[in-house]
Length: 110
Image 1 (tube, helix red, strand yellow):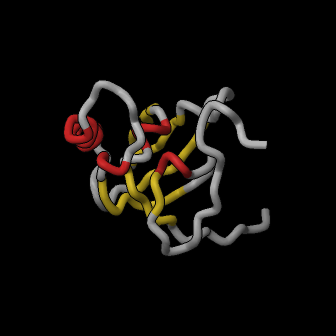
Image 2 (cartoon, rainbow, N blue to C red):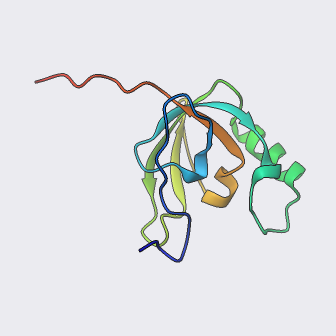
């Protein structure tokens, strides 16, 4: 049963571009584009303003992102590691960030 407070996790296929807001905890990827017009955000911000703010925070093409934590209620907000910076943002804003998953690193035995 999906949670009533946010998007349910969806599988991400290698090579496919997906909104960062739809990714699950532990996801690692590269930003392909910032397109806030695709965001379902119902806030008072226009898509252009949201896009500008995301870019100013460092969400630019080619940057590496990793979802480190997600909130308990509805998996929102999320904590994202962006290059060497940690940022918290709502999933609805993260839906304006299009990412492509990084190849999984092989596990090493210790």
